[in-house]
Image (cartoon, rainbow, N blue to C red; front, side):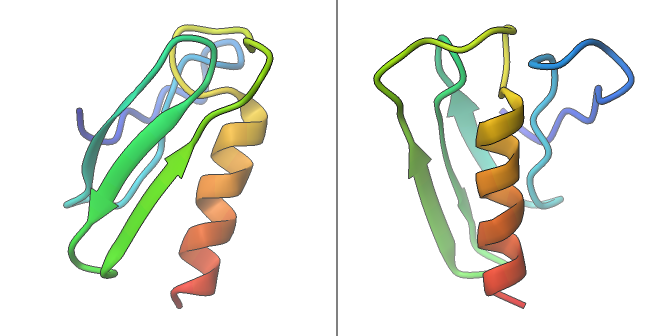
Length: 71
């Protein structure tokens, strides 16, 4: 799975990662991906299912924070 910027749809229907990153979302808002350009591997799971079919707002906020930390 590559980046899917559907932020104009209701929350939980997009996943925004780097242009050359790849990975996959899981049910309820989890995600795992790798971005070779940033030398970043990322995984997120939670103990309560979120809404939407892709990444929820909390998950995307964590992805965004990881990217900010890598410069």
